[in-house]
Amino acid sequence: MEELSDALLIIDLQKGVYFEDKRIDHFDELVTLINQRIQLYREQSKPIIFVQHCDDELIPQTTAWEIIEELDRKKLDTIIQKTHANSFYHTDLQKVLQQHHITSLEICGAQTQYCIDTTIKFAHGLGYRLTMLKNASTTYDNDFLSAADTIAFYENIWDKRFLNLIQ
Image (tube, rainbow, N blue to C red; front, top):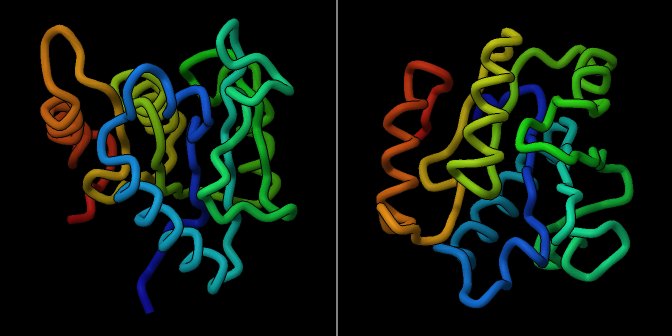
């Protein structure tokens, strides 16, 4: 049986993040990958935590704010609301993790260079052991790099510095 982290942290997989003018990079593959991870965590009765961003575009209780329906979310899963790229900033995430004695996290979600990067670095600074599957985050093309190049760039920075990247 695969050794998993203490909890799976799924960041900002919301309708408004994925369905702008164009579709975000490798959406279908990412959903499949994350649902496989969710199943493994459920089989081992480990917590699954969804982080949901709230801002001027992802307004609570609107369609854009909702977590995408393609994910295997259950009522028992924890949902953390945030208003900043850092999933710990002014949220209950740290308290929830401490209550469940969680010391390691597997991270996935959107967007690579914003909320994923910020949360990884902050969680690392708090002492959490972190893992991520290769290509378990996503983003859009930008003025400097394609989405795929952005993801590869950040994975290279994170691997063995901030987390263990699983191939």
